Length: 292
Ligand SMILES: NC(=O)c1ccc[n+]([C@@H]2O[C@H](COP(=O)([O-])OP(=O)(O)OC[C@H]3O[C@@H](n4cnc5c(N)ncnc54)[C@H](OP(=O)(O)O)[C@@H]3O)[C@@H](O)[C@H]2O)c1
Image 1 (spheres, protein in one colour):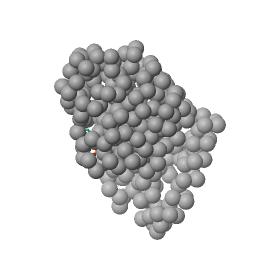
Image 2 (cartoon, protein in one colour):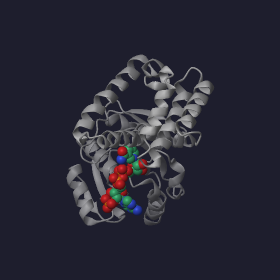
Image 3 (cartoon, helix red, strand yellow):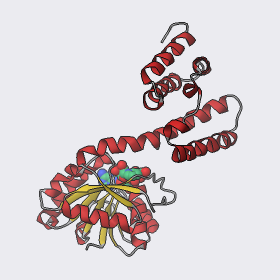
Image 4 (cartoon, protein in one colour):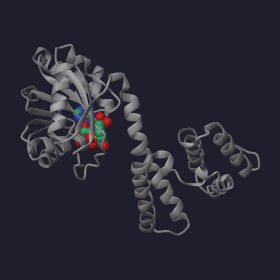
């Protein structure tokens, strides 16, 4: 089984995964970014590898190539790599780490008989410290050889490989984005609301973090329906109307998001979605004197 790997696009994910793989015995080959300085930093953080500021034939020395560029660059990188190695790609394994894309984006490499696939940790990498990967779900997808290596990598990292169909990846990834990126936008919006009435950021964090933690504990222990609290869960529609008024001095996105989330909660949490949705709409209209 393969145990040498080159990293193309060594940013937050590339550096993090390579660092962990190095620690469990993988050989790190070429580490490629777009500048010598970022490549050197990446090698330093990984603790191994050779820094390059552009695709290099050294990449072909590794048995596995992990493309960890932003999603929008993967297709172009695959084309560049295919041109670089041509028939030498035969038998190599090339994986990318995009959550929404599947192996089809690596078609130029598959055309030269590389085995292609993807490996996406359902975890957030800030770049500061490598997040915990023990027990983390990692979506894997690809042809047979690529899948075998992807699963081996995931297990080496302590993660749980979950095999997806390529066409299901956008839905899988959208689910993750709802609870990570979008949830963070909610936290920041709530913080700004508290700060507008005099809380410091520190006080806001102190207020919101225990609330969110307990919500997650309740969700884990009780499931979504029993963990659901707040005015909508109780049918306090007049409170929802007050909330709309409280958002008057905020940018439109605050009240738009609040309404959209209320409707979503009605749809996915309420035992009677249609009735709850119509009551939310009515409360919303009334709070603005009939305007929507
Ligand atoms: N961050 C997360 O939480 C997370 C979690 C799971 C999966 N992912 C996926 O992992 C991938 C990387 O995300 P990331 O957050 O690690 O991105 P990132 O921190 O922005 O790093 C991207 C890296 O790619 C390099 N790069 C950009 N364009 C390139 C190109 N055309 N050719 C070669 N290298 C290029 C950058 O070089 P420079 O350093 O020189 O700018 C950088 O090293 C994405 O597919 C993302 O969807 C991200």
